[in-house]
Structures are given as C-alpha cells and as structure tokens.
Amino acid sequence: MDKLSAIKTFVRVAEAGSFSAVASEAGVTQSSVSKQVAALERELGARLFSRTTRSLSLTEEGQRYFEDVRRLIVEIEGAEETLRQGSGQVQGLIRIAAPVGFGRLKLMPLVKAFMAMHPGVKVDLQLHDGFIDLVEQGIDVSVRIGTLIDSGLVARRIGTSHRLLVAHRDYIRQLPQGASAPCSPQDLLRHNCLIYTELTTRNAWSFIAGPGANVPEGTKETVRVQGNIQTNSSEVMRFSILCGMGIGYSPDWLIDAELKSGEVVRLLPDWQAPQAPIHLVSPPERKNAGRVRALGDFIAENL
Image (cartoon, rainbow, N blue to C red; front, top):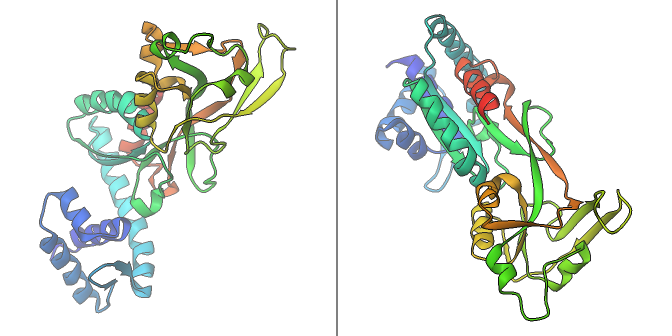
C-alpha cells in the first residue's frame, strides 16, 4: 500500500463525504477508492468511517485522524509546490467555488487563460448561488460577493459588484398604453419586478438619490416590489431580464455586455443601489498553497 496516497484519498473522501465523488474526481472506480481506505484502516487498526447504504460519516477516531493528517497533507503539498515554483512550474488540482452567473460569465474565461499558461493545472469548478462550506467541501478558493460572515476564512478583495435597476428594451417597448418606464423608486409598484431570492433583502429594493434625482441628494428609499417570477438562480434572473419578462435589480456583471450594446437599458440612473464587495476567500490551511496564490494573483490582476 502507498500509505501517503491512501492518506490523501482518505482526506478527500472525508471532505467530500462520498467515495463515488472522489472516484469521479480521480478518474478511477469507486471500488478502488474504497479498497484504498479499507487498507489504511487495516494498517491503522481503526475504523475511520461509519458506513451505511445511505450515508458515510467519520468515526470519532476518524475525525481526530482527519484533523491531524489534513494539516500534514497541506504542508507536504506546500513543500512540493515550493520546489516546483523554483523552476517556474504551477501545477496540481485547484478546487474553486463561485456563484453560478459570475462563474460562467467572469471566472471561466480567466480560468481558461490561467490553465493555458500553466498546463499542469487541473481545476474542479463548483458553481452555487447558495452558501457552500469551503472546509467541508475541500474548496481551495471561492468567490464571495457581499459582506463576509466567515471570520475564519482568509479574504482578499478583488472588486466591487454594483447593483443596477435594468430592463430589456422590449419590456419598455411593450408596456401597455399609458404606462411608462419608472421615474422614481415608487413607480416600481406599477411594474412586474423579477425577484432574486438569494438576495438577503429579497423583494425590498433600496436606493439612494443622486444629484440628478427629483428629491434631495442622499434621500433613501426602499420599495417592496412585486412580480410573477422569483428565483434563487442568477442564470434564471439573467434569462428573465433578457427575455423582457420584467425589471431586474441586477449586479452589473450579470448583464454588462447587454448594457453596452443597448439591448438592456438602465432605469433610474439618478438613483444608486447598494454596492457589494467581491472577495476571494480560502480556508487558512489553503492560503499558502502556491497554485492557489498564483490563481488568486491572476484573477485579481485580470478581473
């Protein structure tokens, strides 16, 4: 038995919570992964996992062993990367997480360019619009948009997400006779608004008056909008805006190309919506991995 390889496999199974997921990731059979972990258990004389037909969990001994050997694996990988970087190499698997729309529209082109520069790099990109536990899922680096709540993560700010009020030009053209595009936040009550449920304020849309608004600059207004579509998917939100189905309260990066072309128009330009920071975050034990640092530097420079 290659003990180091078996320990690495055990760590990934513990992180992923699944033999099949690790097998798929490594391009081997589930049986081979299970046999490798079983061999490690025989070597140690202890059960590391409790297995049933429906679940897989660490035993008490397995949890202690996992916490100890995961740190060792990270240190070994770090030492190997230090040697590779001395020869200009960046290689190995990088597990990345990001919101769906941001990952597809902004992150993937950068990942593609980074991998072209470093052919030895492999990427596991996981896209989720909801919360993902980086440690539990074994993620090396994640894009987080908004206020950070995980104080134990190492964060690096890489940009700002500007929320805009937008609609497709067809939505404006097809308004009923006598109706018009909104001129103030309160006018949104007469429009079909597209609601993104992953937004903490959901259908409560907030604005601050700018110098061109018809009220004193700095005036704050919050409108509880209504509409016939709500979704937890940024991709569905984007599709709904582009199909002219209603007015969106959208981050600029989700529809920036269509804004530039004029296909989508910005509404209430004299009213500002909240901004949100964009961070790259990593678990503390991953922050010094050379491949993670290299990817983070590349994203920060080119986003």
